[in-house]
Length: 286
Image (cartoon, rainbow, N blue to C red; front, side, top):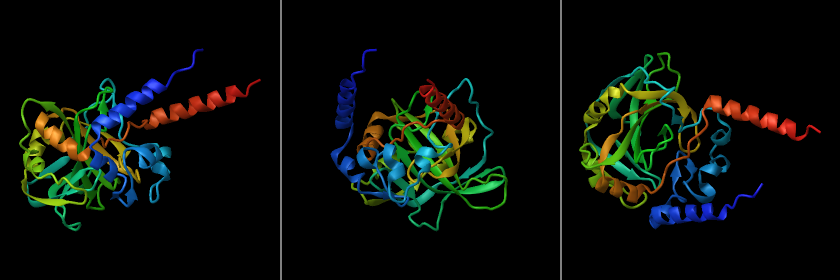
């Protein structure tokens, strides 16, 4: 069999990185701490080595419920929507942590005015942030932007034992701008560790735009950043919202490429393990 020549592939990848990374973001990502772990999306602190980072976990490579995943529309159907109540947030903060921009109240003890009740368990909105491009895929296709609204468990009652619930909103570039994103794009902090204020974020409108989470894929997964903690309930909205090319460019200039590669689903993980065992045993079958 003729050996595969990997050099053209490496050259294409290198060119992609060069053309798609803002140099400031590229360097800063190596230096920024997130969730107690210094990580990035390239090089020695990139996704392939997250399990080796100080403060991270082996679960990044060994976990069976890692996120993000690809959804197959021939198999995956919409989940029952959780009860949700979003109110508009005023005087919030937007922070550039070097890997993304994060919107919160600015006070760790004060959540944003949004909550979700899933199987009787209440979650409150801690923060939301963005990935470019999307981390989750649908039928192998990615989207231009993915927004993660990260909810933390508030009540101990209820059947859902997951500590975190994330509502993911997908966006694709279209002709018109997105009014929900306007105040966020207008106040993007350009420098790492910079914080700006936003007078009002229309969370209520966002909930309406995604149809109260009524058309979403649902699964048990993990954080998509180190330490890759599992016990995360995911609701990934099927229908992408629009974002203008100008809005996307402004956001992408700050975030750069910050998407973790798609992970094996639990059933695929077991299939891969069985295939490996068969292959391994056959190799030594003289």
